[in-house]
Image 1: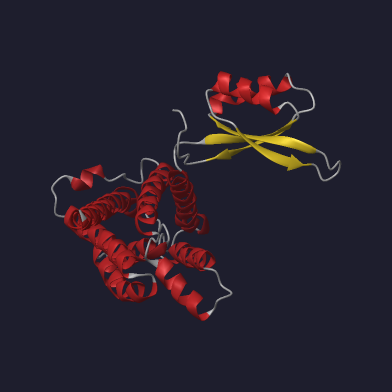
Image 2: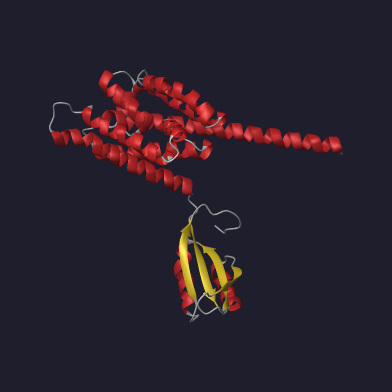
Length: 306
């Protein structure tokens, strides 16, 4: 019996290890491929730098006409050793392998017949290109953050600065690095052209960064968005019963004391779907003296009916 328990525990550990390995592999493949397509199809042809290490590589390609994949390799190899000791071994390996996959794909794309035909040429609509590029880069970023909690690149540099200057946050430093890359595009693209033309790459990069941030937040917050109602009432039993019957969601009751009146009342908490907000508000109107507030919640877990 004892040996059987040990074997069962070892089996669980191996199963957990395989699941982690599979999850990391899928994250590396998905983020690497999506990022490479974003840069190759939308970013490089439309001449804007999306910030971060990707943006630096794109700018260097614009100046030297050497594929940005080579620059991504050159920039990420030294960052790997910094991240390995600064951020953790698994995080460094996953983020670096994803970037190396992106680098390899960018190089290989140039040798695949017909790949240049899928690039979104600037004569179509550069604004749409910056939006589409931002969507794909945001998706790749969200995949990496879900998998290892870091995107690598400028985050590593920001973490390094934070080690020296604790009063500077990592997020602020990352934004500062991105801003420097975006501003540098002003001096790289459209040289010799009017001032307004040189502003185009900067504005396109800002649009791309904004979309990347929004898409990343949307994916990380989850798709199962719901709303949490907090209701203060003196008819808790009756109200809770009606809510459960009409919305088919559970209700939790807690004790609450008003600090002005010092009277005890019931606090009901209920999480419902967005389409049920109107129904719950109609229920509450039938209970005078009831106070309620609600706010959005995301990534709902547990017994939340779909």
